[in-house]
Length: 230
Image (cartoon, rainbow, N blue to C red; front, side, top):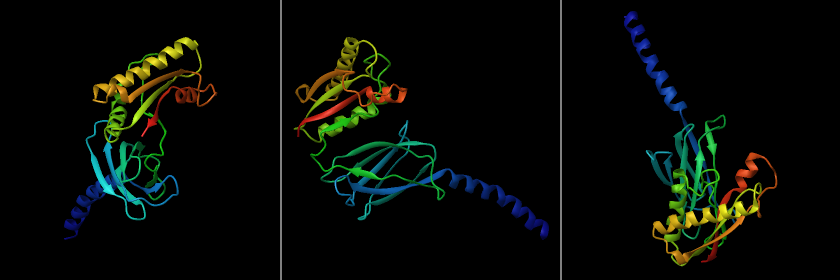
């Protein structure tokens, strides 16, 4: 009998270890959806997709106090979409890493009331170095802009191109112009009318930072979307 019990214990240990590993690979992502204006709680629809292949997705609604939670895989980046009536839709990426001692990661979503947004930076828009060639990894960011414009048929935007301030000024201006035109062409290919998209190039004349670090230079190389008319 004792030999039988010993065998059962030995068999159960691998399964116990496996279940512990599975639990350890997940992190509880939690937080609140709040108004950017007055920190009021918002009941919003929150959805996610696992990057880069979109092979896992989920959906929930934040509670009346704004709280939400998901259990997500540690070390994975997810794309989140947060929608609520009367507020601008949020599209952002969250990397599930560095949880606290309770295996939780806190992420709050701050939503801007509809009509208050005047300038949007396309954070995940990437170009080949020194080129106007849009990286395929940027298509999702642009597709989200297409959806945003489709939901607001009266909106007119201006794409504003910026480079860092190093190098030849004329070359930087030409590069920033070529990049916003490339973005405009992409939007048109997705059905956005040409008259709704204006462009303006600044080269390196309007930097976000005058530091000469690689991080500062990367921030300065950007395309912004200015809302001209709601």
